[in-house]
Image (cartoon, rainbow, N blue to C red; front, top):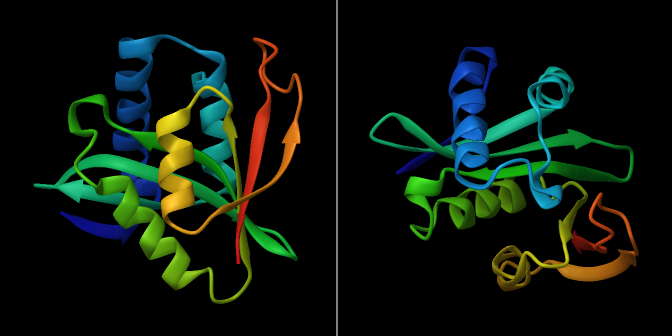
Length: 145
């Protein structure tokens, strides 16, 4: 497994990964990324991905803000989950970007596995946004400094 910065040549693989997630679970509120939203986000965000045998198995989109790097999307291919890929991507981001400024992200309150991963990697809950998602669920905001 290796981690690398993603560029425009990786966009088809990124879209295919999102389609695999949607095929498995549909457009759930905690991962609502239809093609038009994904296209807009990919056009403006930076990306880091994990590869296994040249297959993109997970990626993170983030953008640089004056006070932090904001993580907007975390995607893990359903067939490659629980192999440590996202942990390696986040470790890469923490080491590469976390030295410059904070990393921020938010997660659906029902996504407990993601919360456990973020907390394991040193992210701290800083706030909650009640009724943030379409299903009325709370968004939990995390920061890593």
